[in-house]
Length: 461
Image (cartoon, rainbow, N blue to C red):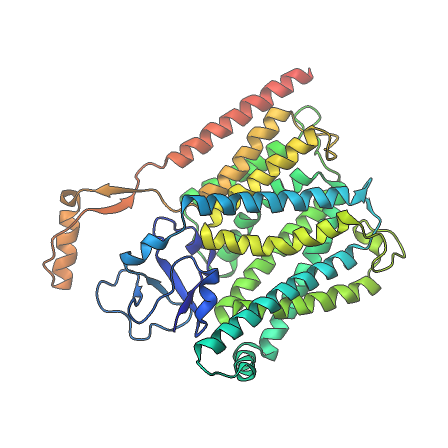
């Protein structure tokens, strides 16, 4: 049988220098390599533990165990064209979300119910997830040669659905319902480009949560990127002349709730994936089912005016092509991000969001979308945005490596061999760079922001 090589931990997604690292998550699903980064492992091509040279681990089907595939599998890694297509797709879909969310409202108000739109979005995603599960079960039935589809469906349900997992997904669906509804409030009070710019801080905030909750270490380079991202965000939001923020207090409250709950939900989602041995698609189907039910209840209980809607709005009242665009774009972004993780990595995801932010900013400058009424000088905001996205890249990028000659490693290798009773000669191998040019570039950007802000302050006088 084939095995789905799905990377379940975000830091692993960033290790592009070691493209054959994978985690075996979902055995017995032959076609699940649709969501994989590398070809599935097989009996003729078994994985090995990272650093293991010859003998594969006997229990190589264990879930959530990290292995290194043989070099023969590396030739099937995604091409540059596939990565570029994933990048362009994410940029277009993210831009579509920002565009439709803004044009579907009129002067900060929505003529339809945001709860209804979120409910229909969850129904859209549930339909897609159910179709994928049906395809996987059908493929497994064909592979079994005479297998019964009903029995395969029953087996899939028994292995993946339980009350405990369902309760976790109910809580996760409630968290994402809050995130999605608050997003409408954000777009009602903030430009689209500002939303995606501030959302770029989400990976760093998630990492800080993981460092606090599960003691995940943060390197010096990552701490530098965190501090520089704070500087970049300040440069994009504070007017050096009046020292006022570019958005209203209510907009920042919505943004803080959105980012905080979203990051917390991401940590919770990672816990579910690592704790319960269930299919990712089965988990999605549970979460989307709960999402439909929760948002339907919120439609009847929560006033639409809370997040920018009109009072006493019917479920489908006010629907037009812009609302359908909101539903389609928000429902498709998950599939696009899955494709990005399949054909690229989270670095490409960061640059895709940066591309959508730039595109939306251009649309705001051209007057196609409403822009902020106040804020820092345009050049200071541009440099600040560059710092935000580059700091995100520095945080998630793999460490820079260099080849060190064997002579420089001889003493260290000789000592290690003596301790292990081996006599193997040292060979060239990559080691981290002594000086990190990424930190130097962050410093240059910091100086650029400081000079631009100082020039803008002088212009105020």
